[in-house]
Image (cartoon, rainbow, N blue to C red):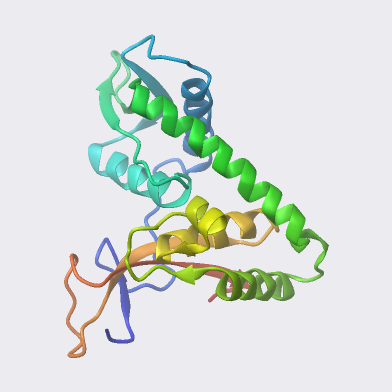
Length: 219
């Protein structure tokens, strides 16, 4: 693998990230409301739960699904989504299917997020002074306490915390979520790496990683 990484949208990994129409804050809020709604159910009672934030096109919906599955779904189970037009609204709405599998996954996501928050508090990251010191402490703890799973079977953050193994997705999730708790400007980038000759394919060398804003610059 070469030294240059490219995002899944084919641009060099620098300060160029996909930006959602109208931002992402409202979409994330609607996502968590839907997850809490699903987790409150014991069994399916409707066809779907709507994430009440519209998307202008299907491309943005797919990008957003990739975002939440890469960042917020800390379990090994994927959520199953669908799309819906709700007249007369011109936007497309993302829905989470009200299947028993999704209900169980939503409950696991909330349990996992609770464990991540508790671990963050137990490790005392909040008591560390200075952004750079917090970033280094989080990075060093992850590097020293969780092993890379070279079987590629244990991928997500919750497995990393409970079993001590995960792959790049889990490291990225934990660094992002710990970092957000610490007030760090942290983002997630998913993409691919170049081959030795500098070429790259959007299906080879898949990777996901973090960048942080420190002293006004992303690193």
